[in-house]
Length: 172
Image 1 (tube, rainbow, N blue to C red):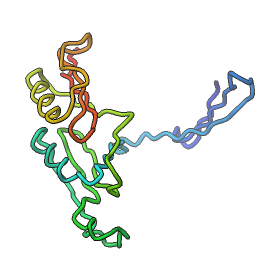
Image 2 (cartoon, rainbow, N blue to C red; image 1 turned 120 degrees about the horizontal axis):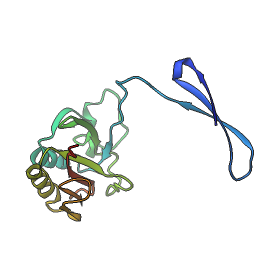
Image 3 (cartoon, one colour; image 1 turned 180 degrees about the horizontal axis):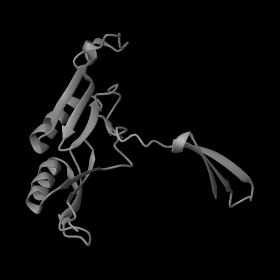
Image 4 (cartoon, rainbow, N blue to C red; image 1 turned 60 degrees about the vertical axis):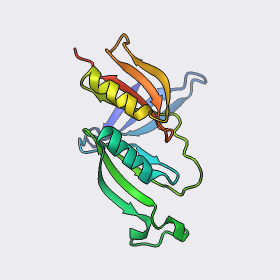
């Protein structure tokens, strides 16, 4: 596999042969070395965003850093008036992590599939507290217990359908 670097590492071409047919194929990849670039989850709660944010505030100490309702938008949303009090966008902080949330278009129950939010805490007591709080009115997928990699790890689905993995920080 050969690589041609352009623009000081921000864009490069990868040449490779397809294993199945032996044809050469080139792919352009973009990379960034900007440490201010972040990936943040954006959760759509299907009309239950305000309830979810209050739950996370009570259970995890989440802080709503910014909240905008559909009625506060400078541009018309084109949605029915029943959306006015719904949350268009919220930025939420839990510990050192930020996620975003919205009621979305309230088009049915949300399906949070294919991912989990991972909550890493400093000790077992905090793991037990967070696990119990998040699983309230939800379901436990894997009980919080000792594993080969950490003193406590468990998985759950909270009452909004969001999947969580709770673990104690691994100390080396």
